[in-house]
Amino acid sequence: MQRVVTAELDLQVAAPVDLICQVAAAQQVPVLDEQFTFTQGDRVYTPTEIIDQSGSRLHRLQAETGRLEIRYEATVDGRTPHPRTSDLEAISYLRPSRYCQSDEVFQQARRQFKGLEGHELIGAVSDFVATSTTYTPGLSHGTDSAVTTLMTGQGVCRDYAHVVIALLRAMDMPARYAACYAPGLEPMDFHAVAEAYHDGAWYVIDATRLSNRHSLVRIATGRDAADCAFLSYHGGAVSLQRMLVDAWVMPEAEDVDGSDADPLAAIERDAASDPAGDDYTELVQIA
Image 1 (cartoon, rainbow, N blue to C red):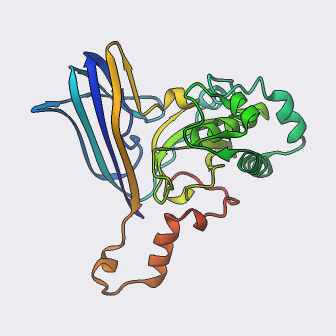
Image 2 (image 1 turned 90 degrees about the vertical axis):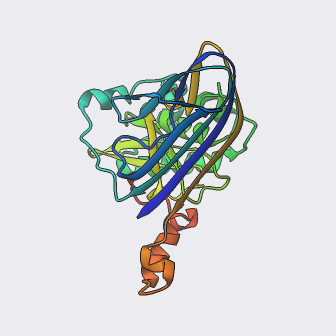
């Protein structure tokens, strides 16, 4: 399955700043082609690429004052290999973190999901968060955590992911946060999901039910949103003037001119970018 992902960010830099951008597909993603530019008038920046332990790619530059335009586009084909998770990594994803206070939701999780393990636990937590939280763009804040979302019952994708992660960790299942591109997502934006570690593999949980998990493209992985911000800066002052994110599944070559088109392949391609094509019950890994 071939997917195209794009991101456009226009920033206004009010004072020289140390800028860190995290919008590129992760190191392990099978990228066929990629363009990534940082331009400011006639100036073209060459950022420093930093790759963290999970394969997330951070691009860092020292930006001067003025309008900075960031453009990213990549074509992804095939499935991402899944390296073995070390014991140390699994342990780190059992611990409470900034936005996923598993220690504070411990009692609730133990009462609500008592006796559940493995696939049953993943399904129960996913269903609970999906049915108890209302998707409300613009009403949550960047400082909201899993505890906040459990109290208010509202949030966006990052909030859903934080609650899932906190509850799973409280039940002794390693869980982590993943930022992704999501073909077919409505409204289109960067997307956040949770991943649960079960039987030696990471399985994706999208409690928003807004994406099809089979077509997700990984950007970053971490303990929570603090590790996966698409933009951060130190010193200076930056404002986001415009942002446009898009992602879609490419038609097969034979579908373009109509010759030798495989109706079944076309159906599978369309289903891969349609949230309705994901029943959210099977265990799925990010492709």
